[in-house]
Image 1 (cartoon, rainbow, N blue to C red):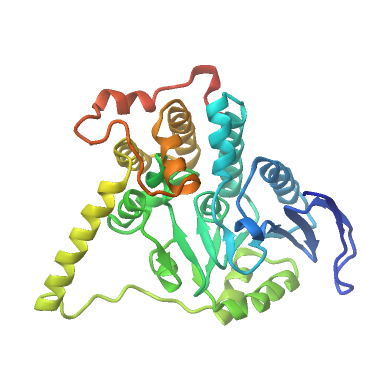
Image 2: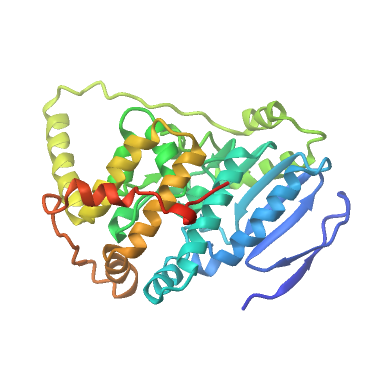
Length: 352
């Protein structure tokens, strides 16, 4: 049960009690604003009350001359944020409750505010980072992964699409990696999160408290100052190409991988796959705000459809892993039906 707590800062920093709901802790530490997502029992899943706490505080810190940087992290050691509160959204969508509109609208407004934040925004993605957790981190200037980081956008498996600005950052990853991650929900782990370009830096999990302390101890920090702190604690990694691409073992591995890829795509919602493909094609040429406007239209199309509810049932509720998609194949889904998902909502369109 949520309750109100009073947080007092260490003596070495200016004492400043801040009242906060326990699901999100909002602290001023030195010249840093620190956001802690505090629902460890549900892997720090993001809900609407949490969004409504984070957004105004972020805007306040952005305009506060005494706040130089913003740090966001997750409590509990297992997850930064494993996603949005999908079950609540599902029940709301079934009942016609406005939560199904409000959650996506306000979440995307927060995602845009993170992307536009004038202060260095630092996400410590130490642990599971999926869905809504990606939206809380990937649009910030600095994203720090560790060996515990597990990144994925698994939405096509539940009849949704990689939202929270996925249409913006995924097509900007090197090659077609973003499209692969979007369609398959493939999980990146540890150093691969930084190699892929999702994270900007990599730090061993045990060093993250030291990193955070150095950041909050900075005096009048600039983005360059923050970068220098990372340089002292971070490791940088790059893709290494195999020297044995032409070997028989490589060819067998490639054949096996393609087979697994086909099997993975066959389990996903055909509607989600087509929507996602078009989303990333369009998003590659759009700004983040324009992508979020597009994604809000898609979110409401999914709320009107049936695959989202069936996907949540199969994956999260009954857990039988056997969704009955409608339509059940890509061939049955017309281009016109997909196009309608991108149509304007008129007065209900997302605006910033």
